Length: 266
Image (cartoon, rainbow, N blue to C red):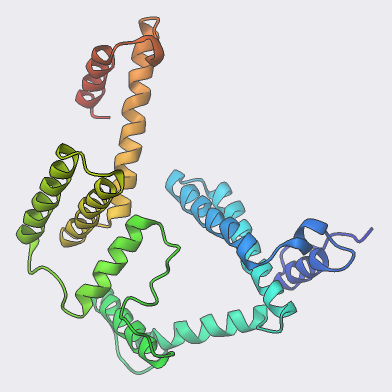
């Protein structure tokens, strides 16, 4: 049996990955391809974000390791296919970071955080034009992004070429319009697909409203999710004090405790 590598060196992790994919390695690892590993990569990224949200540095260390392993896994499969190596991945990101920080590595001069954000987007746009021609400014926005952040990215990209409302009030007007159309579709007994489409329009405009107000819609919704969890757990706790559970309580009971949780600032 081959001994595991000494910890702490990326070269050892790369060797470990090659061993797992080797002829006498792990049958499961050998059976994987990019498409089967991709969901794990996304999952690990979310687990990194969750560790940060929880402020758990031990978990963050471990989750970053899991995410790094995903990068190594993809790079190993690419090397086997003759496409690129892990070293190529490192070289590409180093070159990109140098290119996108001319105020640090070039002669562009100092930049404020806001100026750097604007420069970053400008440099990204320049890089996009140098790649293979696209038939749309929206073409390279990943289709696999969750719908809400993708909606935000689509609208930010469209706004970058001038396709945008001039202020917040027109967005409120559009939101009212879309909610009206959703109500109408429901009232008229429209087909489920049509109702779903109208609901999607409401959510799409809501994402734009968040951007107009200077907020990330994903972050805003995540905060509301967390608030809902806090308040509902408080409802459950108050019900337990009465010898009840949500399952054997009335809506009025739960609403009363919900209002108490809200009043308590949860």
